[in-house]
Image (cartoon, rainbow, N blue to C red; front, side, top):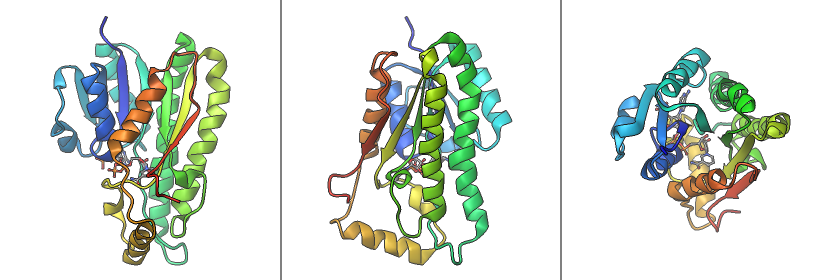
Length: 242
Ligand code: NDP
């Protein structure tokens, strides 16, 4: 039997690209979403059962249209990984509020959009999994991360709330909270001082490098548990991270 459909948001780089590679090798049908589709199309994948669509997760209509299109070809979504996210470091004393809006819009509203798009059908089918990529910044604070921390504490709160709402229907909602990793995440930071502080913080621990493939493996571990077993949260970080 052909393996079911997995949707990954933010598949164009970092953790999302690593998950796409892993689930592609395992033979799942994939709907890979991001704004930079050319980056997704350049990933080293077998594209036989892969659909790539340009989706901004803050735009629920486009997000939903892509899911509908993929389900028509591959059947119902069995796993949604809400991975798309942005981290714009900055001190609230002078940070542009538009950057707060971008983080809260993508990291919180984007996740809610994804969940509302797939959960009604999963609840009706009494099967399905949503894995939300949060952060250790969803559990503890970091200087120059105020709005990001707010967004990721939000992901933890909404995930656990919704887990309680759907668990009676055998649907799993899970959080993966990674530590610092080398991805494209920092490339969007506009505050050079905050960026320097971040690099200095990493050096206090001898430099940190969590390979995205290990985050993908954690996601796979959760997903491959039987449907009636929910690994509710995995925190995964470089061993040296404080
Ligand atoms: P990347 O910047 O490499 O990846 C982020 C992905 O999100 C990109 O594929 C990007 O695609 C996508 N994205 C951003 N905004 C949107 C949007 N509005 N709509 C659709 N896609 C969007 O960073 P990571 O891989 O590190 O980040 C993945 C997740 O992991 C994020 O949620 C992040 O907060 C979290 N995380 C990262 C950590 C790290 O240190 N790297 C640590 C802890 C958590 P595109 O630009 O093509 O749209």
